[in-house]
Length: 208
Image (cartoon, rainbow, N blue to C red; front, side, top):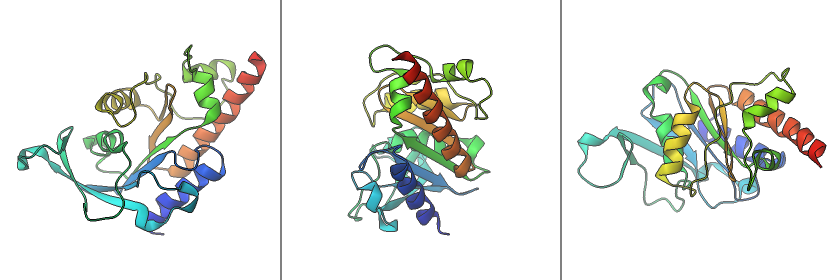
């Protein structure tokens, strides 16, 4: 299966499982040892997504360039003539995909909008997603980092805090925004999101 097809399938699965709405969410993938990654296009219908809507992003060390298109320590290069553009969350993905610790492994980054997780972590009063394990300590899920405080979508502030909170973790909640996961096994990423969505839903029902 091609890398692009893999991302398309993940996006459609997120939509089918009600973990995103029709134009929500984004996924990226970097092959082991690559100086590029693939990311889903922005503002396209995820239930109708196709491989043409997956954008290949090359990253180059910024000292090799003199213009202003800089993110973190790298310049991001893609085909500007393509009719589709990368997700506006490209900085959130590129900060993680360009980490030296991820160079030697396949790396998926998945940003979803699971409704129970968003409600559990709170719209006005905030609750740490990791607290769900206090109620259900038997959950077989990866490491949950501290919630990422609210930042405007697509901002450097959001990208920077996601990078910091996901270090040595597998998933974090983004307040009023969703979840962000990283790992080499996308099936495990999806399993963890669905597990947390299910059990946070149980706790929400208990509160009512």
